[in-house]
Length: 186
Length: 186
Image: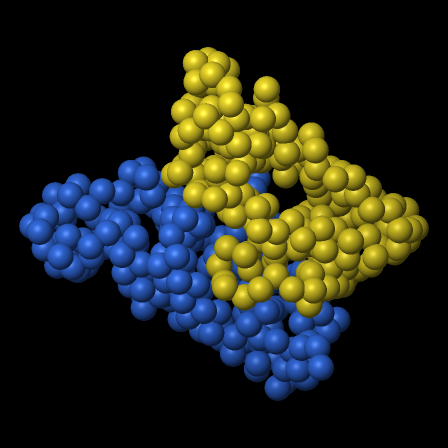
């Protein structure tokens, strides 16, 4: 039942954005009683928060190629693929928009990114251990540096999220990391 | 009259987000006739688009210190200051959220960032001319690389936008630029 409701909620968010989300319509699409949906999720914000929890649980495992460059590129390509996907792209825009106006959604969104960053952080930690990156490199900051330009491009430009953008994001993060830009300040 | 309406619209966006924006309430706060506001701006989307046009016109001139590192740091600090400002921070979140759900607002948002990127691009072009960056460096991509981690941090984490974040953004972009990560592919 939860799966059907969350899928319907994700579909509606992707199609119509946060404003289009309506608990009664989600219940109708999921073929679940309206009362059940209201009782379990309460508000649109509560439903989006639960959707984000589910997205965090289902987020894909990291790649482990043994090379920092390849790992970061795999991460950038996954972000690119997700944000360019006809359903996932608008869905991410919608949850980011929802989080801008609702503290509970924001908290769930932050947790989603924490989980994702923690999943990929070992790529950086292993590169430090292999001596490819300086000691004291902040793995979370470096992982975020791969995603940041892709999200910024999605939100602030109409330029496509192409392979060149993914490559640039991975290469820029790797170069900055090697130069010590993500070393924690003492 | 336009200035008063846009200020009221910006205040409401900062206080209550995109959902809280209401043309009648904007008219009341700006002490302007409701009919005038409806006739001139038509919809909430139209009003936000005009606010973004005004923000683009008023955006601050770039710094020109003669040093790439210092210019990028000045840019990062300006972004940090803007996004941490109690009015501007929520306002930027609100317009990004609005753009996620409205094509006209998205277009105006993209234009705002184009203007801002074009304003700062000469820092990079001059660094290329001085030989501090490789030939063929994409100035716009490099300028966007300074802002991206700060926006990503604002939208996906609850970590503060502190001086360390601004420094890291500027240093990472400079290091990546020097390594050729922003050189246009042939």
